[in-house]
Length: 445
Image (cartoon, rainbow, N blue to C red):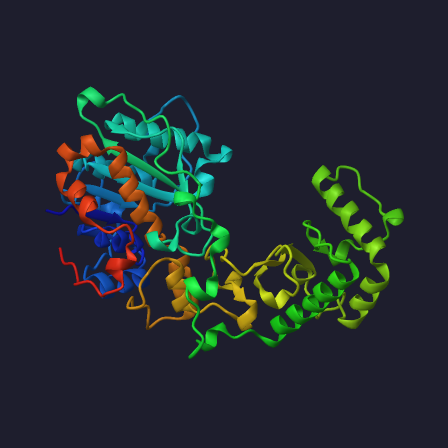
């Protein structure tokens, strides 16, 4: 006995990997991006190329019957005009197309994924409409979001050393007697599982890092090496002057290094920026002799250092060298973290640099960050395309864990609405890697 699932906005198949490892059978997948659809077909044996806005309308729903609907959907703003709430207000958005599938096929379980800000104050209206729309279709869903990150799962449960907090909407279809029931708490929260301590992550061991045959795309440019060497000189030297004190927690900004007595604050400057400028000026006063020497040595105020490279965001605590951290070149500055877990995968321009390896992570290492096995084939495209696809994907271990927790939270209900799903969860291992470490048979429709 197994369960059927549909994979909307399928990307390269992160959801498919998790639900397939749980024993599910994909009966429909859809993805509008041709490059991502090609990778999906190659690895999962299903061609998802298509458009959900065509396959799911109020005239027709071409999505077949299924037990579980999953979607990492784009969330366009819903209208705030008037008092219209519920499904009608979602018309014209991609969420509306998801609702057409739910309305017609009535899956036992719905798992939706989105960025953390979906449940933030700026999207309070959208969040309320999504919940009201699901409840109008007789689904039980918490008012508060389920949020989770792969670094909160231990390796024994398919976790990964990556901070990637996402919002999940977990909804179970109720019968009429249970239609008004709402769980008091979300399915999962941003807390480590089973007393796991995320500080125990070691990127080199747990990802793991490749030590041989490194992708040339991971090589740092001469300019990047120059910027890191300059700031490493700063870090090593300034720590030596501070007699055991850490670097400050606020960003160190060379453009704000002026004597505190000469600091002039323009009218209307926000409080946070005043505090930031004052702290940098005081830091400059404390280390003025060294800073002036360092600025001159490395030509900090020349074209050799763009504005975004003149700021250091130190989050590496007691680490003694920049080359012993994980480094990101961000629009806001150079960020350094301890080398235990990695920041969330984003565009290739911000791909993490492993300081001890003096290189960026490789596309294969990035795939491991998302829980995809080494047999997963991402060949035939540029590294930039691969990083974009992986950055848009879901983490396999998180989805696997979330599915298990959602089924357990609604166990009695799902025994009648989706017995195959309950049985699949019962007999599956707690770690999807146990299944995905071996190449799965291609799962056809």
